[in-house]
Length: 350
Ligand SMILES: NC(=O)c1ccc[n+]([C@@H]2O[C@H](COP(=O)([O-])OP(=O)(O)OC[C@H]3O[C@@H](n4cnc5c(N)ncnc54)[C@H](O)[C@@H]3O)[C@@H](O)[C@H]2O)c1
Image (cartoon, rainbow, N blue to C red; front, side):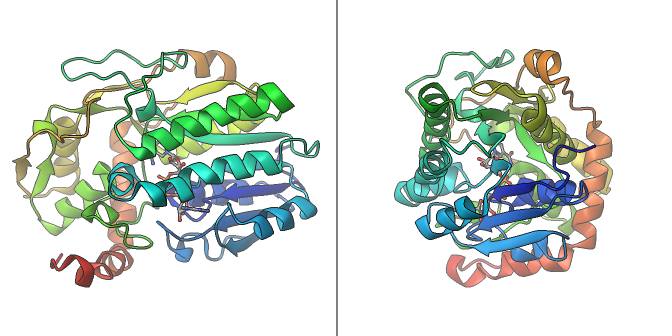
């Protein structure tokens, strides 16, 4: 029997890429209700349309009235996935990041800090905030690695402060918060251009995987930032969803777990695999190093999550990418419409 059967679940940021995949997965496990709270800052409500048992509340999770409504309803599990997406948007507008990525965490934790009905709060932490500052070679980031004061972006600051608060509320109030630290997630449901304009082209070109897949399908040149030498740990969204659910079920309150594949892949290798799987003639353009990015190469250790959560990412990269490419092709008109809504602001024709 699922831990979610007949239970009330809150998913903050549940209309987003990871959130909508999690919402779908939990919806199939007979919950009483899933409250999805999302202000659609970087998502579209189509992501969660038609999913059974969803009560969608459009607004910010920092809104006192929304928090009070949820508190009086009572919830059993909380997943906090809301964020101001992503690094570059936060560099452009640190205050918007603060309002949607930092205040959100403290207000949510504070509201539910002593609520005995809540069995677990799972906070989506970011691997980039603890990744070593490595240009030439990376070693697997472990959960207990030392955190630097030199963060690359307000996004990273907010994500790590969210972790500080998670640890604080657990220590002070025994609030059952578990931190799930993601590496780079890819998969169906990440819509380029989703949500509101956030000040830079990164509103459209979110993460490297959906961007490369779209450009490969469209025959557009694909840009390799950081001279293509950067590396990441790519993890398929179905694996992340399983990992989040494992954190809710088996994670120790107050603790942190990497959700990673443990495999380091260079951005160039990733681009070449996408070119092969899409049978694309797109060219690769080498761009210089991103001036704000100091952890060029990174991947996560899987030892602790395997040992304690019994969690392993098992989706093979080719299988995960093929599913993502298929999803992109079937949703290409929707994705194009989300990209094109920013065309006038950006003044560039996509
Ligand atoms: N995708 C990744 O590779 C990755 C890596 C590390 C960590 N994470 C974390 O995972 C979580 C989900 O990321 P994602 O990739 O699905 O991003 P996303 O942008 O698709 O989802 C974030 C959601 O939060 C919503 N949101 C923004 N401000 C809000 C607010 N004030 N109140 C309520 N909702 C708000 C957005 O509209 C969006 O639906 C985030 O917390 C992110 O920091 C993601």
